[in-house]
Image 1 (cartoon, rainbow, N blue to C red):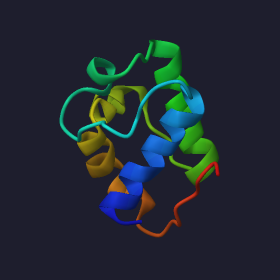
Image 2 (cartoon, rainbow, N blue to C red):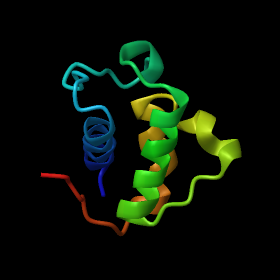
Image 3 (cartoon, helix red, strand yellow):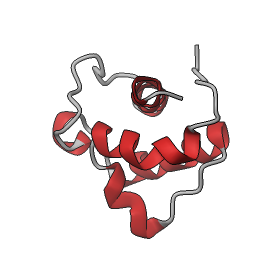
Length: 89
């Protein structure tokens, strides 16, 4: 997956977890929790959905790497290089 596809995959997962949140205007560098209403359970759901859709295991020590969309893309890039984008649509 490309950087843009990873960002889209994370946005799609966020939309699945929090369907009422506006994800179109999310920027890459601000913390996701500052941009939309995500509680700790929502965040864990995102991590679980990454595992379900892509088989990516994110250790708890690495959760901080997923704080922004840019961080998600950078962290997930080596794990998703050989994967296809999976959307909920």
